[in-house]
Structure formats: structure tokens, C-alpha cells
Image (tube, rainbow over all chains, first blue to last red; front, side):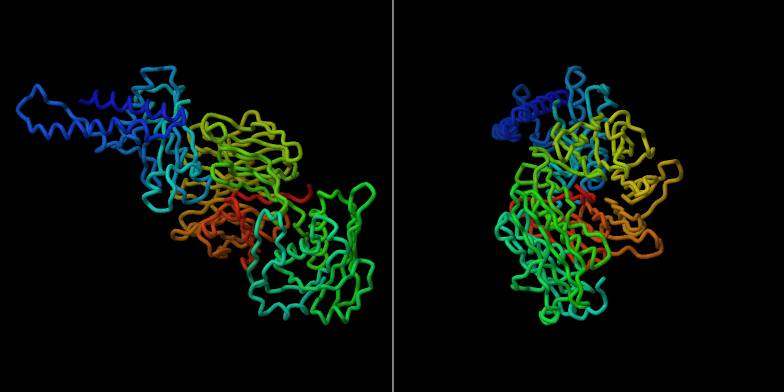
Length: 177
Length: 427
């Protein structure tokens, strides 16, 4: 179960990364995966066949924990650098992928919401990125494969000046180098 | 010097609107506020200024009005620097001072700009000048006349012929620009598809340091203003940011995260190996030199939230400078080192504050009532502060007097304008 989860996340992550590199919209690629998963759940319940264990399909619901398009993004609380437990799978997937391919290099980009000064936010974003890099290194990732950088408040994921927008902008992203 | 006798004329003036909006305006300038002491001054149209591309008299008037201590008196009298103005007539028009001049095209294509300044109240000539300038320097010539008038009448050096650097964002395009201190005559120093922040003028006026994200991370560059030649100063592992020049223009203090967390370092203007200045377990950033070059003011969150601290460069204890409020950032020191401008969060508002460093007991003064202020920077004469703010959904630049009473808003109709830094005297 766990390894299926990780493998799927890794696949999604590379899909997202590929999307980044080619300039394709991020939400284009992972969408079919999400649909297939919901479709599976629907046909399961439609058959209403709990007894036939041989037909049982283990469903992975990506909509519950880590939303598909966001699988390579880690979100932070206000004024916080703590990588929350809910993002452990994301970190593990990244660590696994980096450990499997030692020539792979990624930037971990820290970002903040729009409030406050540009330079101080740059340092806050850097601190978030460093926290993520530390978590990766604890999982055995080589220091030479990851670089923590920051965009501060310069590159928000979404526009807006409310808590919903701010929450989406306080984040760390993985980007292939 | 003009003084006391003028000031009754200024009372009741609530808002002086600018009379000047040139066709190619980079900005719309809106001036608001009540000055305690505003000298009424008439600036006659320069003879033949219509034959040039610049409205010299209007530029001079707008400069003087923005400074907060002058009020333009309308006049349509045709007069130049060779005239003998009848003082009684000008007194009758409500002017305490008069500027008149002319522009003459020379055989080599340059313009000879001449002017004279009179103290109407005392009934005497205060002086004048003649300058031959290239057509492209006509605006500069007007600003220099405003500087002359300002210095003669107030005793302080004017800053109208200085320049400002700032960043514009138009959609996803960024530009580092250099413009006259009134926001006009803007020229692009750098165009980029990625953000540019923290421009910093070298005190000698010849180079600009800044942070560019063009390589998908924060790297510090230095660029020659005159030639556009640029070089990487700091591109270490992690982020490189917040450049600040030493007073001798030979070295830079900056923030590097190469040792794991944002700390302050010192580097030569030519790059090379950085020397670490702070060693804390917290964020240290936004360094700025004192005028004597011996101390750095900076921002640190070593006490929890961000506050302004200072550290002597020759070794010694770090001292905390700001105490009121939980979030104080972006320190800027006046050229005489006596005043500290910074941004303080009050509730949800980020506001420009001024602290008198010579009087540690004094309460810092709020200079604005806006809520998104950023990046203050002093004019080289220490009489004005330029800073970034927001108005009507746009990033705008503001200037304010140190008492917060006279403000000018520089609004671009086409772009968000941010990250201002006032350049030094001279070009």
C-alpha cells in the first residue's frame, strides 16, 4: 500500500516536473490520474460486491491527502518553517527519486505570502527551503543533489490578498535543475 | 535667505496640485500636504523655452513645490534674466521671490540656459547662472536651476538634479530604471522576464548593485550606469541578496545563505571571497552602512520577530535599535546618520517610521497613514525620503518630508513601480 502510494506520487511528481520544464500548464497532466482514481471508486461502489475478494481493487484516493497537482508542493503555516507531517509522503517521494538517480538535481524553492518586505521575505522563503532540504538530507539525499533557494514574495502561486491566497503562496516547490 | 515674513501666506493652503504634466510623462505626480513654511515664488516662462523639448519653468516650479517649502505663483509676464523687475509689481502679484531666464540654441547644437533669481521682499538680485547643455540635458539644466534656487533661499543643498533607481513590473516583465528625482526622463538599465529587487547606488553614483532572479535564484550583480557593463558579485549556494555599498564605494555588505541561513557578509566591489560579519542562528539581512562606514544597521529575527539591530564592523557587541512593535524592517540611515527610517507593522499595516537616533528616548514618528509601505531611502540632503507604497491597486512611489507633512505620489499609468533608491549627488 505504502509503496504503491509512493510510486504513484513519484510518477505524478515527474509528470509535474516534466510539465514545468516544457512550459505546459501544471494542472493539465495530473488531472487524468485523479479522474481515473475517482472512476475506480465509483465502479467499486456501483458493483456493491464486497464479498468477491478476487475482484477487489485497492483504491488510492489522491484527492484526500495530497491533491494531485500539488504533490510536489509543501505548504507552511504563517510565520512557520516547520514541514508538517502531512507532507512527509511528498518529502519521501522526492528523497526516493533523488536516491534512485544520483545524477538528478533539484532546487527547493521557498516562497512566502505578500505581506512584509521583499528582502525579509526572501530570507523567510530561504529558511523554508532549507528546512525542506534538511528533511531530504535526513532521508539520505546527498547535499550535492539539492539546493535551497528562495523567491520570497516575488513569485506567488496565486494572486489575491486574503488568507486563502496567502496559504497557497507560503510554500516550497521542487524544480529540476 | 528668506524667512519668517512669508509664512502667513501659506496658511489655508490645503492642497497644491501640480501644474505640470508633460506629454511623455513617466509618472503622474500628485502633491498633497500643508507646509508650515511655504515661500511664494514666481517662475516666469523662460524666453524661447517653447523652442526646446522641455518646459523648463514648469519643471523648476514642480521641483520646488514638491520640496514642501515653496508655493508657485502663477504668472504670464514675459521677462528674462536681462530684465530689471519692478519689485512693487511682483510684490503685488504675491511673490516673495522671482526666477526668470532664457534658452538660446548655440551653433554646435547645444542650448545656453541662463537665469536670474531675485528676492522680491528685499528688492535685490540673489544671483544667476549660464550653462551650455546638450539637448538631452535640458531637464537636468532645469533641475540644477531648482537646486540653485532651493539652496539660495533655504540654505540647504537641493536634490532635484539627483536621480532615483526603481523597478517596474508590467505583467511578467521587470525593468530596473533610472529616472530624474521627479520620476521623469526614465531610462531602462535592465529588462528581465524575472524579478529584480533591492537596487543600491554606489555612493560615487557610477554603479548600481541589485538582485536579479534571471538564473532562477537570487544573485547579486553590479552594473555600470554609464556603460551598462555588468558583473556577478555574489552567486553562492543558496540566495545572495540585500547589497549595500560602503561609503567609499569599494565594498559591499550583503546577505548570503551559503552557510545555511541568511547572514551578513562583506565583499569587495570586484567580488572574491566574502568575509562573514554576523554569526547568529537567526535571519540577519538588509544591512546598511553608517556614514562613517564603521557600523552596519541590519534586520534580524534573533529575538523572535524581525527588529533593527546594529553591529560595529571592527568587533563589538550587537545592539538592538527598535523596540516598539513586533515587526520592524528595511532600515535606512539619513546621510548625517542622525535619523533612521524603517518600516513597522502596526496591526495589518506596514508603515514608514522615523526614529531620531540622537534621542533614544523619543517615540518613533509615523510618517504615513498608508498600509503597504516598503523600502525607504533618504535623499542625499536628508530632507526627503522616497519609499514604495500602494494606491488604487497599483504599486506607487512616494516622497515625504521628514515631518510627514508634504507628500508626492509618483504614479505610473502603465506599470507597478517599486523598490526605489535615491541616488547620490552628481552624475
